[in-house]
Length: 112
Image (cartoon, rainbow, N blue to C red; front, side, top):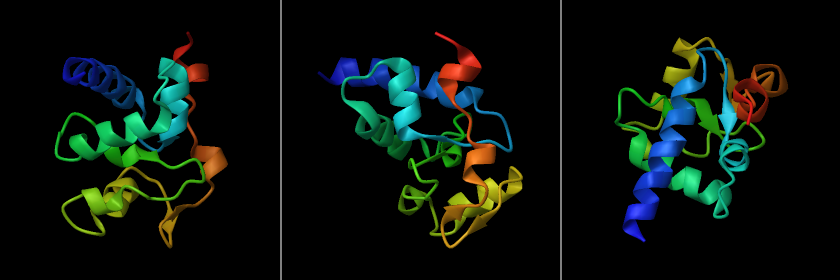
């Protein structure tokens, strides 16, 4: 089972690396794109493990409503928001402003 998770994590990280600056996506959108039966939870586990990986912009993955639900996995409680703002994303009260506008759908952007 551990090997499967590592392979899934690698696939998830490949998708996350494609999210451009100024855009965000959701755990569920990545899971749907990859056809993961374990769904958004598996993507969440991968993001929890990736927040210190400099080549995986984990801050760009939020919940389906645009909330920064993964912020407690970063070094500080404000680091996720700070990284998003550095990417050009506006955040207020842990919520991405204009979420629908900045949402990046891997299925549409990367195709199948």
